[in-house]
Image (tube, rainbow, N blue to C red; front, side, top):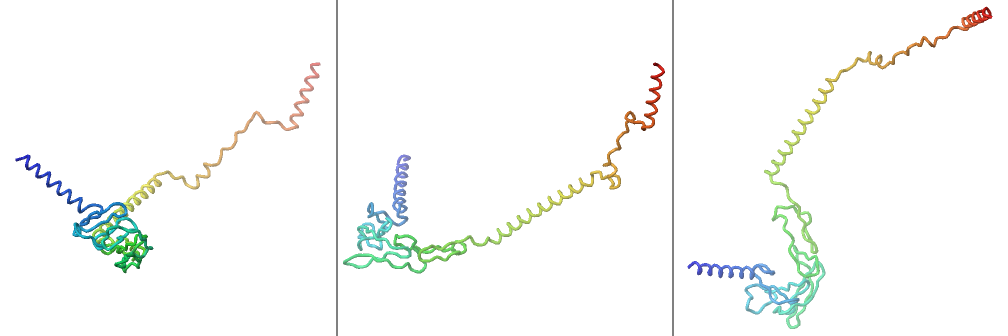
Length: 226
């Protein structure tokens, strides 16, 4: 019984994976890949097993389009930016390039116009509305009221903390300056005056008259000894 349940589960997983690959392949959900190389085409599932038409299939190679109404092959036909390819003729099938419709654009040569981005759908602001060759450019819209109020509260709290810290630091600096000793202005110049130089008594010299008398006395004493 357990083995049979396991086999049933395995088969179910295989079917689900096959369906996933069928709907979520390179062509996206609801479409399947048909053909190879330049003739690779994405066709809708309701055309599976039936005759394909250009409405059911689309060539996936850049600048290639269905070469016949049944889209059995693909044909190269580029179109300038701002235009898209449009098939024409029945007996003699061909293409022509026409301008993109309002609200669509084409910025390459693939010949397929795509709709502009809807900025308002995602709550964005439209910076550039778009034209035939460029898509619309969106900008983030204004913040919700709840988020805006929270951001304002946070900014006010940070500013208050910075103000308190600055006030405390300034008060500490003033307190340190008051604690330092201050000399009066009258006594400060006296402290800076250098002390007078000391007199050297050994270098004192006698006047010239006294020196002359001393020399005469020495001369007389010398004569007496002679």
